[in-house]
Amino acid sequence: MTKIGYARVSTRDQNLARQLEQLKSAGVTKIFQEKISGKDSDRPQLQKMLNYLRDDDEVIVVSLDRLGRNSKDLTDIIEAIRHQGATLNVLNLPSFAGIEDSNLRNLITNIIVELYKYIAQEERETIRERQRQGIEIAKKQGKYKGKVREYGPDSPNRQKRYIYKEACKLLDQKKAGNADLTKRQIARMLGIAPVTLYRIEKYHAEEKNQQER
Image: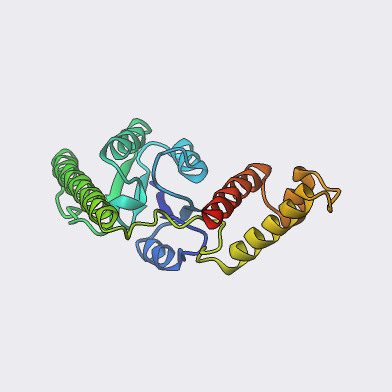
């Protein structure tokens, strides 16, 4: 039996160290790790882990939400683990390792996992409903400004604020005929994808329209 760990954080700015330490303490000998959103199961390292599994392997995660964020994805991933003949161990859930009957141990573990999946789904739906209500109240009060754009003047990322300003400057120069550059060349110079530059251009135009009103 091989103990296989899966660790995940949602963004590149977050740190995997705590999860990795806990997995190693649990005796994990191989770890698949990635920095990617858990909004769906289309994750490279998760798929590699599922393909790597063999009979009697044990998949270990720190918490259930590292595997997935909604009940359907979690169900599909857990079923994929079982289909490979492996079992799942979630470190922050109760452990039934002391129960000798493996069928009874798996049955109780499955019940606990289903309970936590239900609770997690309910919590997410409650949070979304509160966010919706908060947005509606803010709109009525004229305080809602919408989501902060990744590339924009108010971006929390200093480098992306700078890229936005430089992109706007180059786009304005191009429009005025003062810059002999294609949009693809501008995107390449700034190290962003062309589609990102098009989004910046659209937002910049909206911003200028609002200023002219």
